[in-house]
Length: 495
Ligand SMILES: *Cc1c(COP(=O)(O)O)cnc(C)c1O
Image: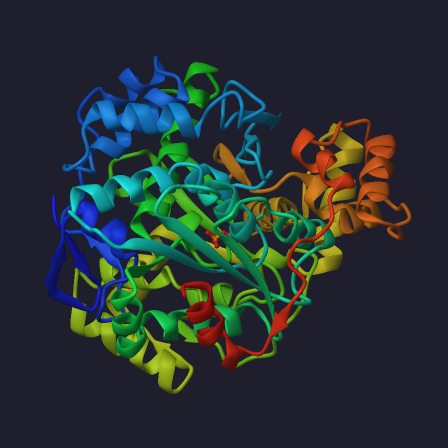
């Protein structure tokens, strides 16, 4: 199976090339030329497998140039009992008769980014070998908090790689910051950027698409790649957990074979929910994909009106991993819903870059209406959901998951659609202690470790071991930079 750029159908790549490059050289994103369907009886077969086996099965459908033996080796290392604190890897927890949580935060950094970033380094270094690439690769990451740590954890001390992470100086939680700045490894660099996530992401994209920079670094034996969800190797492992969740619901007899399920997804860069869209495209019985945003509700407006408009105030919220106004992966959806129209997709993206807004065709809008619903929760609503769910069910969730939970409630009220729903739970509540404590009506002042202990006392839910281990750590990386300095930071790092 070949991969093609969303902005130029003539630009194709093998799966190994797409994963090694991250972004197509024309600025487009790689997508599979055709989508595999789940074969007849596949879901039944997958039900009998564990998470690792399901991952091999699903990924193999997309990765012709990787063998089953290789993929088995990768998933064994990525989803190991050492890294994940539950044998289910991505367990489904029941809240009430028709509401479930898909918990994606049992990995080493306690956020759902681990699901992809634990396996991406294996896919990527294998891709370099397959391509006969003799350069080493430097991973550049712009992060709104969780990607950075998950990528650092995945790539630290991996042969033939370096990793450089940029995070918005005031846009991440204390725990997220300490997780990143205390990262061990001889091949890592972590920098604060004076700006917000979009500033960091835009600059990283500019570095990628600067031919002079590529040339200069190539001369020194380096190529750049991305661990952001624009990389196909990031997106693919995320398709697995939608299918796995469906199998778990079947196994628990919560649904009948073929029954349609709604997924409600806390959304930022549109990677997670896009993986759900792809799972549906493969034939998984998904009814609606409900796109949940915080006050940065650019996607709510887009899905409801067909106009994407990033020219709006930017809010710093209690769900910082969703504080995003430019959702990169939306490009893949537009490409798909336009019927694979590269020129049309490129045109929307050019408008977004130039005027800051675009309106999609009637055809795309109609297709979106059938598949997606969208709403948002502000910080007050988010806190209320955390408090109410803990009070009524004893279930503690983080702020991002709470946004989705609140949006699902609104969706059900507005549409009367009471179908079985899965809320995608994207982070441990312990990553966002101040906001979660505040929601529970408790004091939110104090050091990160103190707040973690406080939340344990208040909730009776133990904190994950990797977060508890942070208490003794000191930051290794303390510098912050302006946007314009970032290219030179990268050059110095790759001297
Ligand atoms: C990254 C992240 C999201 C948003 O996921 P996207 O794939 O960027 O849409 C939501 N919640 C948490 C906790 C995250 O880390």
